[in-house]
Structure formats: structure tokens, C-alpha cells
Length: 308
Image (tube, rainbow, N blue to C red; front, side, top):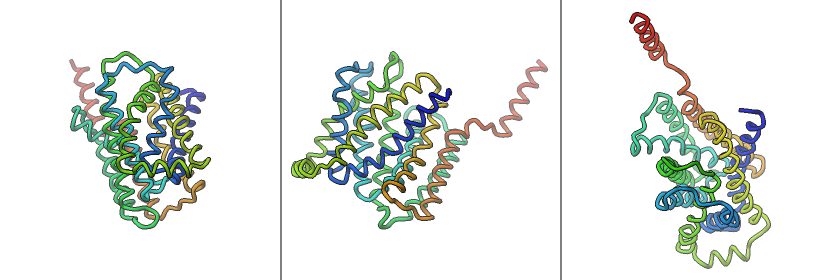
């Protein structure tokens, strides 16, 4: 990867890491489901008038919007609202990598590899350690809602794989915009049904410049700019080269939350975070390591071929 593109990747990682701080700030004066609905409005307007609909069937586009957008962000926003620290949310949310793998094994027949299983065990242990540290800094309901959001994100990844099979190349940004447009109605109905119209009125009268800045950041920087640049990198390079950069998101998220929001982490949470990150690294990079028995098997095959 060129230095220029590596710099672009780091910009995206920083945008996504700071995204969790913007969510926390935006939730200060706006209920979570309404914040999600307003975010998707800003994501698709006016961009939807300039980007053609991606060549994805409507049923898949709707399913993607309900999982990747409505499910993921409804649970994530609600989790942060109900006591999940922004920095820790940036870490736990990355467990979507394992939920994607589990769902892929169950529904589309992918196979486990040793690094996937080992990474899952290590990260799972880390999340157990983090979950055991409940109190004023992190609530149980916030933790489990964040986990549920990661599961929904994983389901969206599987739907995206199925939806994009056999279709012509298209812009990732267009998919983000159109899926965001589809998500506006269900997210708005969810907000209206659970939070109520009175919460809309209160949010309107109590809006501050921090709320507006948060929405602008979530829509234009984290979503449009972030996914637009990420899509360009995926077009130029293999996913195996680009995706590991996302491992830096929790590092940016946790450090920025400590600096900007004053969040503090206990020793147990830091140990759990280290285990989760170690598991993610094993999951992503472990496949490049060949086990000794595999190496010996390859040598035997080479010797057999030479004898033939």
C-alpha cells in the first residue's frame, strides 16, 4: 500500500474511532432512536440525488438496512445511552468480526480455521473479564446492547456478501446512502413508538451546537467520508490488506474517549481490552502462520511429486 493510501486508511480509522465520542455527545440532548433516524436523513440527503441505486435487489437492500443500519445503530446508540462508555463500546463493537464468522459458518457454509477459533476464545475471555466489571462506569444492559448491535452488524455483513454476489461493480458510498435512506422510516417509527412524539419535541427545543455538530460528524464524516474513502481502498487493494487497519479503531476510540470525555478504565477493563485486541489480531493475522504439521505435510507432498 502506498504512503498516500496508508494515510487515507489512517484518516478513516481516526474518523471511525472518534465516531463513538460523537455518539456519546449527541445522546446528551437527543434520544437514541431519533438520533439514528436524523443521522440517516443527513446521510442520504442530498447525496441520494447524485448517486444511482446500487445493482442490489430491493429485498437485499431492505434486509441490509434493517440489520446493518437499524439493528446495529439502534442497539449501539441505546447501549451507550444506558451506560456503555464510548471508549469501551468502540472495542466491544469490533466483536462483529467473530459474529460475522459464526453466522457465515452457520448459514453460508464457511469453514473454521485454527486462528478463528483461537481468536474467538481469547477475545471471548476478554469480554467476560470486561463484563464482570459492572458498576457506575459500565452497566450490564449497556454492555449487552452493544454486543447485540455487533451481532446485527455481523448479520448485515452476511447479507451484504449474499446481496453483492454476481452483480456489476458499484460504489460502496452508493450502498451506504441508499441503505441509509431505507433505514429512515423504520428507525423513525421505532423512535416514535418507543420514545414518543414528546421526546421529539423536547429534543427540538433542547438542541445545542454540540448536538448539531455530532449529527454532522456522524453523517458526513464517519459515514459518507469514512465509507467513501474505505471503498476506494477496497477497490485498489485486497480486503486482506485493508481490513486489518480497522484494528486501530478501538485504540483511537478508547484513547480519544479518555482524553475528550474523561473516561477512565479500571485495570480489569484494560486487561479485558488487551485480550479482546489480542484475539482480534490472532483472528485477522493468524491465517498467515502455517502450523508445523502443515509445513511437514507440504514437504511430504513436494517429495512425493519429485519422486513421481
